[in-house]
Image 1 (cartoon, rainbow, N blue to C red):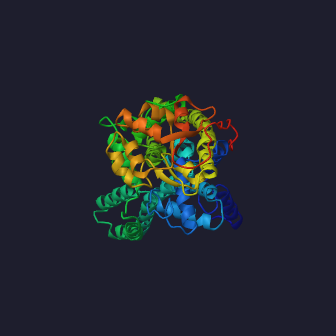
Image 2: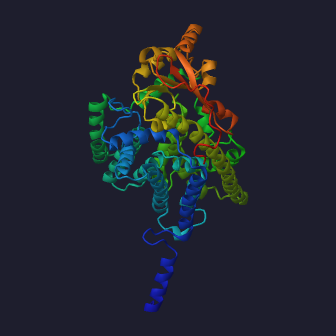
Length: 538
């Protein structure tokens, strides 16, 4: 028998090794702390905010101000892709709080919550086996993966989407599964892909169609679909057809995305740190996928992760969708889960196997640290350029153009938010007429000018002179006379150039403002570009 004193001592010892209320041992608490600290340190050092975050913020500001869910007041177009996140930002703005700052804090917390879910879901008794556990290794991969770290603090909705995926993977009931999948669909359009995959997996694994989960997810999504169709004329965000017309249909090659997607999982591209990290990551991922496909006690826990990984790899790698950094985290999240499974299931038949497994972990850790340092340096210099160029350009437009000025440009986020001017975005996110214009290809710029007659045009002069649009390469002008007509119609009035920046990005952050010659306004063509560091350097 155990005495009362002994019982109390034992209970106290048990409580001291676990996080109260979460049932997590000290090692897992340390890994969660590492993930949070890494993200906060990256944010503090870089101050990075993605261009698209300011698109959502302008929608939120207009909604909170009573203008509706619009970018340009009076124009019912939804081009933000993420209704749930815009509503969160609008609520914070309405309460008078710094919406983007708080959203970033909540995003970091969401990553911490995702880790807690995995550590509890895939490690029922973590105190029994800490060394080599799949959940522990996943936590380390998730904490240090530079893409996840950077996107987490970028001001985007991605961490909330990842949390909804982890909730769905951890759901024990159909009600929980349906609720989390409905939330995922409201956060990002590709939540529909996650819902289709996980509902199909549940159907196949249980041989019973998940009717309740499907109805709950549909009932959560239906109000938005009805509202969007009634307000905007389509249940799809405008960003979907806009990006298809501006980027995807003009991309050459059969599988242009396959190499960049594979490079997220294998050491074939990128800086040295990234390649070193992937040398360690790829064997664990391969072992995890193979182990999850075999008959084993934990196969049921990992098979939905395999299904999601396969679906996201096909969605990103086998299509012509133009890939932005925040598209990758769902693929990386599921890859990290499977890599953790690979570590725990590493074949123990020969002694060299343990050394190889240890080598993969060392490669990933040291490679990730190098990669994070490289990413942080790039993100810091890029963010400095955002403030020196795009934010400054937006403020200049606000100070030097009439309130009624119509401005045509491609980078809609910073410039659109800080200028508070009516925008024609040349991609078509908030200007549906550009979808047809962009789909037609060469000469799109001339057709845009003729149709909308903007008062100001903001363009990258290097790309304009090359007659090739950024990202797509589609010619601005179909004939030389079109460029001559543009030069006669518009005059350059201001340039914005970045300070020290990677050579590959300098042309992307070099902008020139053109004014229609018939538009009244101060003559400012001789005004110099402000020196680097004069506009909120970070």
